[in-house]
Image 1 (cartoon, helix red, strand yellow):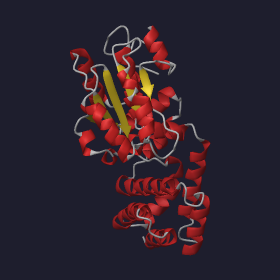
Image 2 (cartoon, rainbow, N blue to C red; image 1 turned 180 degrees about the horizontal axis):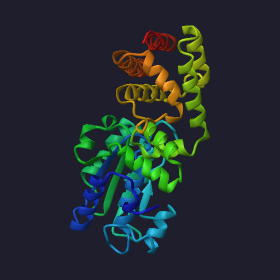
Image 3 (cartoon, rainbow, N blue to C red; image 1 turned 90 degrees about the vertical axis):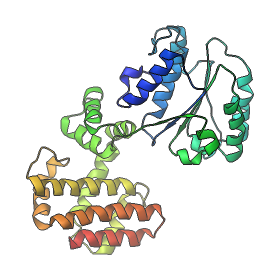
Image 4 (cartoon, helix red, strand yellow; image 1 turned 180 degrees about the vertical axis):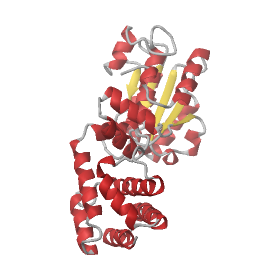
Length: 329
């Protein structure tokens, strides 16, 4: 587990946390909100480790007994709240691991820190029980709620917490991280960074997965056949390739990236900014066939398809409408 200097992006949040540590103005409750893979857990655990560090600086020293315990996830005063049910954190989980435990003073540190990951899974009863502790916490207690959906938390909870929202990291910073830390070549790092949309966790997962390159090849194969095959054949093809719709959004995001490349090349004739540089000939061909308005219509249609799928509109119908737009433009 690194210190704050190893965190990619989120400099404003890090500055806020370090200022709070330096001034001794630590809140009793924080909410770290951001999509899965955005870095919530890394920031929260680094913050917790820094607060418990024996050197009492604004970064963890990584050498003291407390830091070593935190890095091995064996610190008695940094409690990671767990839950047996995969889709909910119940009142018993909160009662036994936090409400009853918080009455016991820290074993060896200044604070007792509770980290609740996936806090959006807290049941209403669990949230109400937690609220009482947040309202009247012991002086040494700090609660860190990590969530991908702050709207799932009660307003009475969010209003009593310091809210830290993690924004997407700059694409250039993601690319640099992939090249320096994971030793990816420039082209691959650019592609993975573009697809991750500023999410370091997602970028790392893509970079370390062989599956993504397979999905990319399949997505391009579908696009190249979009004017040859019948609509029902295209729908069957993407349904089969996307694992019966399990990772359909990856395909749709790749479609968007592809057509943005087509649009960029049509407008500038430049190759440098393209994600799919290795597909230059096909990009040129598609750019010559489609108008600016047509390409924009396709990109909008893909975004609309994503919205419709999230709203549980019939999969086959959504895909037929999308491929119809791709073929017509």
